[in-house]
Each structure stands twice: as structure tokens, then as C-alpha cells.
Image (cartoon, rainbow, N blue to C red; front, side, top):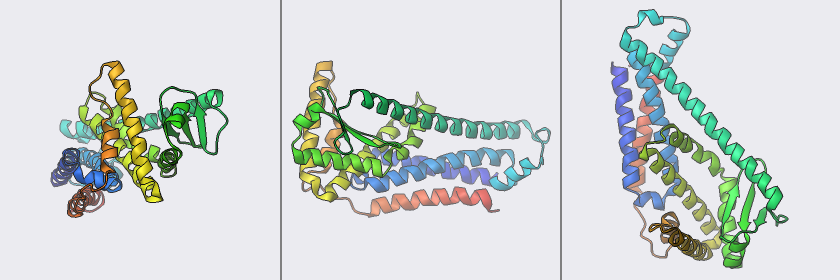
Length: 298
């Protein structure tokens, strides 16, 4: 059971690191790109360690890859496994099938939503100005529609509410979403959210990664010289979201936008690199441990 024990330890370590990321957010706000990468590493580790744990319970004397090879050759057969081993093996392949099917479904839903969005834009949008499509709407909104024909959509209210420098800053932010393919970066977490619909943790992780990707795009726009107009444009969107929330009778609104705006304020305290470095080393250690147990004998 030494293989299963090590997989369980890697899974627990990755889960604890992920929990620490959710509660200790200060450094992730200063290093959003590193934090997004770390979330992907931890998620991959949890998946691989979970699958490896189940396979190792079923075939404790082998690593995952040798065990899968033995199963492919029909040795051992299911009749040679005891009840616990058979249940563990079936659970491993059921988990793998469920994850792959859910990821495929999340990808399909994303592509279908993009297609619908482009179809609607063809019907209601004004003639495009470069890469930007303009639609009539009373709420100031600017967002990106990724895919084969990437488009940035802006409402007439947004164009009226934003100054030209602010609009240029927002467009730089959205272009980074498209060029960096942030829609693909969020897909694994959309899959987890769909897989664990009733788990608050999956929603919290999805929201956190989504916010970090927004911050990555903010940093890109700031590096292009749009820092001040980007900050003032976020003020416009924060005020609008709060007004809309008041009309709906909601108390809390604009928290993500406020977090993005606050981190762009002058004099925002930086975070020492030791914390993200420690998180990276931990995540890579857990992932390397899991991967080694897939191919190497102990």
C-alpha cells in the first residue's frame, strides 16, 4: 500500500496548499499569473493523485503505468481481485470517464455559447470598428468573445461613460484575454464547478481563478501604459454595478471590480517573493511525487 499512501499524501498536500491559496490571497493579488499557474498545477496533482490512489489500492504491488499495462494484458483479471480491489479499480475508471466527459461537455458548452454570441452580434451589433462590435444597451459593458473569430463587444452606454483613454485601456485589457486564451485557462475550473455543483469550494475556486485572470489582463494593460485610465474605468464599472445592485435590493456588489481597482492604487504594498516561491516548490513537489509513482518503482 506504499504507492497508495504516497498518492494520498500528495493529494492531501495539494488540497491543503489550495486551501491556503483561498485564504491567503495577498500574494496572489500581486502575482496573478503565478497564482493561476499554481492553481493549474494543484488541480492536475489532485486529479492524478486521486486516480493513482485508486489504481494503487486495486493493484498495490505496481505503479500506475505498469498496473494499467497489466490490466491491458488481462493480468490480473477482475475475478482475481478481492472486493476492495475491484471496487477501487472500477472507481478509478469511473472517475476518469466522468472527468473526461465533464471536461468535454464544458468545452462544448463554451463553444456553443461563443457561437450563439457571435450569431446575436451579427443580428444586433453596429458595424464593427476594428475588432470591436458595438451594441445598444443601457448598461456600460465591455467583454471579449473568444474563438475562431475573436471579438470585443462594447455597449453604447460604455462608450458614453468612458473617456477615450479609459476605453483604450479597457480594450487593451480585453485584447489580452483573447490573445492569452484565458477562456481555455478557465475551462478546467468550469469543469470542476460542473462536476461538483453543490460544493461551495468548487464555486470559490472558479471565482478565484476567474478574478486572477482578470488581474492578469489588468497587468498587461498597465504595462502598455494604461494604468491610470484603467483604474478610473474600473471606478465607472464599480459605481454602475453598485447602482444596479441597489435597484435589485442587494447589499454586496462589485467586490471583484473593487479588488481589481484597489490593487492598482498607487503605493499598494508588494509581497515578498518568498511566499509564492514556497507555494511553487510545494506544488511542484506534490506533482513530481505523483508523476514519479506513475512510472517508477519504489
